Length: 139
Image (cartoon, rainbow, N blue to C red; front, side, top):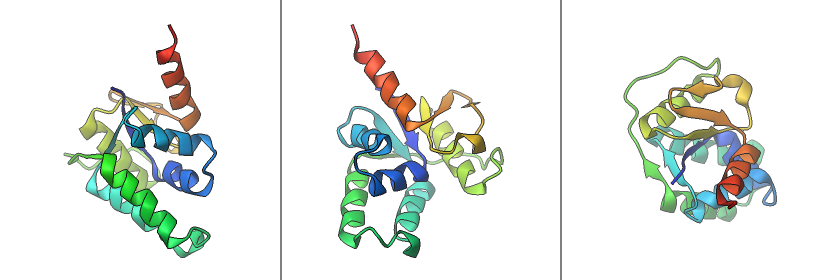
């Protein structure tokens, strides 16, 4: 099964736009079509960012339900080393998680803050993940 790490911006976009490609990428994990990996740090960032006042358009119950779905499907890994690859410090936590998970893909809406590839992990957008899965299903 494909192993993925979802950047926080994918989670936020999924929450704000339920019909978008980011929501579909998260739905793939919830439906066990891909394996979703997190670290304690990345999981805490999901919750912190979703609960920030600037996202108060989301009802607390919606956030709670979304986080519960995520908690039910994630596989938690413990990154080994601290990285300083990305200019955005918090993005380094996602690279660390991807490395610890030996993830196939790190899915983000902000590819410019990441290298194109980190070790065995390709950095892609949500639409690219969906296209990869569709192509894998074709005979």
